[in-house]
Image 1 (cartoon, rainbow, N blue to C red):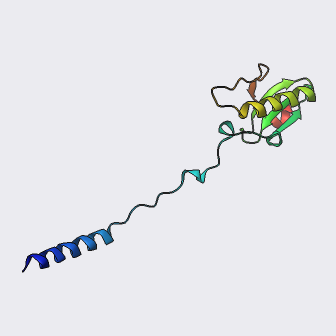
Image 2 (image 1 turned 90 degrees about the horizontal axis):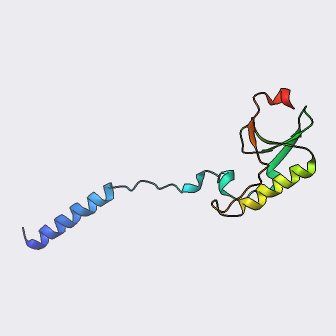
Image 3 (image 1 turned 45 degrees about the vertical axis):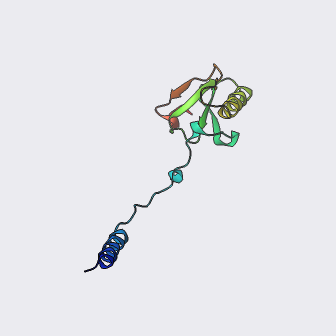
Length: 114
């Protein structure tokens, strides 16, 4: 065999080997939606309820069913807290300073509480 035949044979071998090697499919990282604490929020994402104790409690739609913030005396306080969340969500995570009246709580049995 000549040197040219050897080179062709090696080239064919490499080409066949490359054809067998498949690259794994890379999936984009954006399969999951951005969580609420990493993106700007909207007022429509919050809801509030009047509890049996006469106070209002606020909840974001992505929080657990038992997670609420409150209590607040009236709708004006509720709207102010929601506005605070919306404004602060536009800032970088280290620059956020939430209202001091935000207290989260776990309500074990929401059906009986509200």
